Structures are given as C-alpha cells and as structure tokens.
Image 1: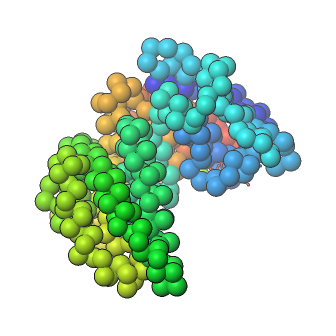
Image 2: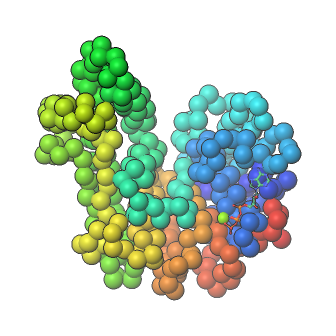
Length: 367
Ligand code: ATP
Ligand code: MG
C-alpha cells in the first residue's frame, strides 16, 4: 500500500502541510526539533488511531489550536482510500474512511497497516521482556483480531486477580473467586501462547535472513520463545495447552499467595534474541542492537505482506545514526517492495537513493 498524499492541519508543530509522497523511499531530513518525527507520527496515527509516543490525543493538537486534522490519500488492495482523523480538544476524535465515519479504531488497521521503527525500539533488545511482549502483541493484533480480543480479556483477568491477591489478607473471602479466575486465565492464556508460538515460528523463518543481509553476512540471529515452563510444545492447539497451564498455576499457588503477585501465565513470556549464539540483551553492541531491532521490525513487515498481499508502510525514525556505511546502504537501497518514510538529520543526497523523494523540513514546514 502507498500513501500518495498527506495533509496536516494544526497537527503538532504544523499549521498546515500538504505533501505528495513517492511510492518508494521518502527521506525526510532537517535539524532537530523541526517536525520530522511528527510527520511519521501522523501517518502512524492513521493506521492505529493512536500515537506511538503521545499518551493523549490532545497532545497532538497544535498549541493554541482547538482541533487538528490528519488526512491521507492512499492506494491499497487495488482501491483508493481517503483516511481522515479529526482531533478535538475536549471532545471525542472522529475517524473517516472515504468520508464515512468509522465506529472503531480497528477498522483503520484493515485499511492502512504500518510498521514503525523509532529510537526507543533499541529497548526492544536491551530491556526486560515487557517491551518484546508489546512488540509481539502489536504485530499479532494487526494480523489476528481474535488475538486482540483474547489479549484484552487476559489483561482484565490479570488485573482482577492481582487485586484479589493484594487484598485477600484483609478480606479472605476474596479467595473464593480465585479458582474461577485461574481457570479462565489459563483458558485465555492458552490462546495467547498458541498464537505467539505460531507468530514466533514465522519470525524465526524470516528474521535471520534479513539480519544476515543487513550485517553483510557477518552475523547470525536466532530467536526463541520462552513461555510457561511446563508447556512441552507451545504451538499445540490451545485446548492441549490448558492442562499444562493449570498444572503450573497449581504449583505456584502458595508462592502467589505469599508474594501477592500473579506468577504463572503468559504475562511473563519473552522473545529471546541471540546474535551469534549469545544473548543480544546482554552482549550486543549499540549498532548490533539497532540492526537486530530493525531486523525484527522488517520481519514483521514481511509477514504482514505474506498474510495480506500488501506491503505495510514502513516508518523509520532516525534509524541511520549509529549504523556503519554497509548497514546504511541496506536501509536506503535494499528495503524493497513497499513504501518507506525515513527521517534523518542530514541530506542523504539523491545518489544514496535508488528511487524516491527527499523532503527538507524546517519549523513545521516544507522548505
Ligand atoms: P529530532 O531530530 O530531534 O528528532 P524532529 O524533527 O523529529 O527532531 P519532532 O519530534 O517532530 O522533531 O518535534 C518538533 C517540534 O514539535 C518540537 O520542538 C516540539 O516542541 C513541537 N511540538 C510537539 N508537540 C507540539 C504541539 N502540540 N504543538 C506545537 N508544537 C509541538
Ligand atoms: Mg525526531
């Protein structure tokens, strides 16, 4: 899919902007704090109805303005779409596709899919398991609506169970409901594990080759899925996973009461990343960390393409810094197939690009 035209009104530091984008690589460059990330954020917003960095929609509205509007014309699935998001201070946002009001944000992701890479994604390799779970969840949600439903239910159950464990000291009667929560959490947890296992299987097929190419054949990346220890085969149907989850819960029952925390379930899952057989989390260099994180995102993009037949729009924020010449070249010339929007601080020059456009942004305007 391709975003052909992007129009912003009162969005972040843009009073008004209209941009015609190329179907290939679009480089957006400029000094710090000029509005490069804001541009990618706007495109990302139209696919997820949420920003990768803003907590509230009102942060996206230009200081002093009452409303903001993001609009994009795009080609997807052989059709033309105009997607529009109107944000208002103090009122609900409105989403439109070809002028028709959308009821849910989920309807957007069926039209525009994006894969976003931002500097914070370095944490994907470096930090605790929570960020990698978020990555997995984000990808699988774009592919499988049922997964999103299960995830939302699991989160509700988890919060409820945590409250029971926290408060049962003063109110022992709360424990009566614990068994019921445990069973439902195991049932829904089994669904999550099943989907995650299958998605990670796909990631394992796709990511190593991308990473090998990216590193000029120097590095081997591998992935593994760490989930509830009693499970012999996470790819098994959810029904078959259930008894193993219940068994694990039982063996942690006392420990959960003592620690007052949920200790058993897929909310502790991890996607382990290895480069040349050692843990990337502990040993990867800055550049390797960036390469591995980007390889994972590119793999996600490829899987989305295989599943939907359309390349998601790739949004790369500030990815070129810290990459050596070979890796930069890979980003600018070898990511083929779909549309790419990439920000950087310096003009990469037309020679670095096979085909595409270069935009210079200064103070929320196109130079
Ligand atoms: P860098 O190279 O440092 O990443 P950038 O070009 O990506 O810079 P952006 O993150 O896009 O910069 O932000 C540009 C500017 O937008 C910031 O100076 C910020 O103060 C401003 N800005 C953010 N939100 C709003 C808003 N709601 N209204 C007006 N300006 C805003
Ligand atoms: Mg930026």
